[in-house]
Image 1 (cartoon, helix red, strand yellow):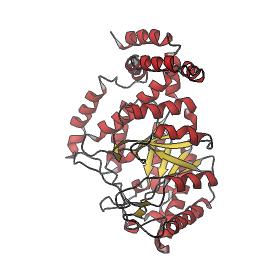
Image 2 (cartoon, one colour; image 1 turned 135 degrees about the vertical axis):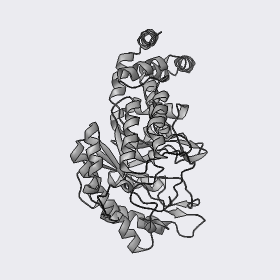
Image 3 (cartoon, one colour; image 1 turned 120 degrees about the vertical axis):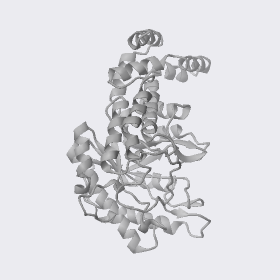
Image 4 (cartoon, one colour; image 1 turned 120 degrees about the horizontal axis):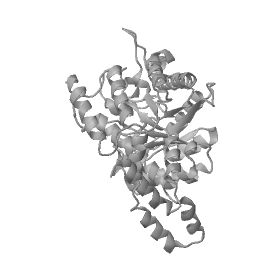
Length: 416
């Protein structure tokens, strides 16, 4: 059976559940993921020559990673050709593009250093999100926004202020709001006697950053927590409790990274609670293995549960960013798999008979609810997915990897 025939058969089956597959596809088309630029070059960027540091690691040595802005943009182009829908691009500040011999440190970055990325975004008709880069830098060896050293702390405050201005530039130029997410690697490897002082310094730094005027209709600021990290196993200054409280008090977003929690925590369960007190939410979708290992997102129960919360509570309330990097496999394939897999999860959520499911819950009819939930698992979501891909002009599930392999053979291998 061809894709259209399989879709028509699936459409009839979903109709029996009260689900309109055409409407589900139409709703999925409206959802944009923010594609993270750092999968393409192992989080190296273009502004420093040193190794990754500050709790960041990539593993593996698969060849052909991008080493120039042009190569990275070329690879992103390829992924866009393999992923259905219109999406955004998430940049880290370390991906500044300097002309000729020009170079400035991160506290002196300006919008002009990201003009190449704005031109790229305009070419594709997409928006840009942004992250200050507070790792892999000599001034980030011990701490950043919570540092005891006022010189260090001022450097990173100035960097974040510069990033606010760049974020506003992105939004103005593209016409799409920019989410600026702040994550710091600050913490302590072992037990410390004074936990509140570093957090006081972090609070003061954030206060200074947010005191800078910016257009809040264009820039949405988020802060990202973590349970622990490499070199901060005992105390993380930017904890979930700290950022959740700070965000609520200051009218910004607390970003939820699906890898930044204890292995037994259900990240999807957190979203509805936070949505009761926040107009919008920011997400980083990744796949933890034991703990924040930033594995490529797969189509698993965790991804499906997060997607269901997004769909049920309104996708327009979420900034959905991707955040994984794997240097052990073809990077374009990793990007494509992760993006497509979360879109599959979102499609699966759009294809749920949500009104019926919620009605059964409200009736406390858990016998029928369980039976319906299990029935849904066997529905032909893959046939709807292939139809959506074909409709959006990208390869189906059986075809996309061949296109990716061809790109490796014809383009990536020339970088060796």
